[in-house]
Length: 250
Image 1 (tube, helix red, strand yellow):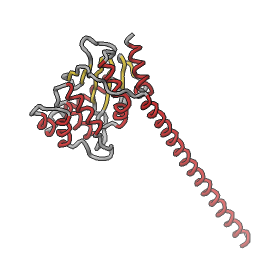
Image 2 (cartoon, rainbow, N blue to C red):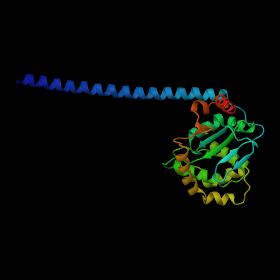
Image 3 (cartoon, rainbow, N blue to C red):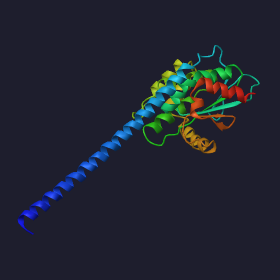
């Protein structure tokens, strides 16, 4: 092969390599653009859902239904004699989507109980396995187990979501949990020690594993109506949630 032919061959190889690199870069850009587009569409969809949920949001009930703390750490919210339909709410105090459910439909859930249209049962679970979310969740759940008064428990429940930490940082500090309990009206002199020693932490963790398995909860929040999972497009939209519960009550 002549010198000119060798030089031409080398130029061809270089050109081919550059063309291949440009092709790879185009594919990479396309992948990034596609991913960004999917995220944008998801964000737009989430924004539309949130706007819809806010448009139909209810104001808090004037009178709360009787609240009873159960021995398993759950809380029942129901008027006397109301046993159905049953609205089970599985939630993790560290879960951002659970906070979103509380923001959009929390008042509706409480109203349905106050109006005698449903028996509501709150199930605080710890679903996270990675840190710091796992420990954050367990601290909050264990602290809630230190409250025996139903009205105080529910007020503390609301404060936990209002003060929910980021998923990337250690939060729900023990001193804060004690302070929020006092703000919620907890007067039990044993409450601070129960929280700071995390008396119920092991119970919170082990029972969560059992409840998640038995109730077939793969993610939170999960709202069940008479044992059947409600889709998010119903649970997160107050008007649709109310409609489903009223229909179940006949």
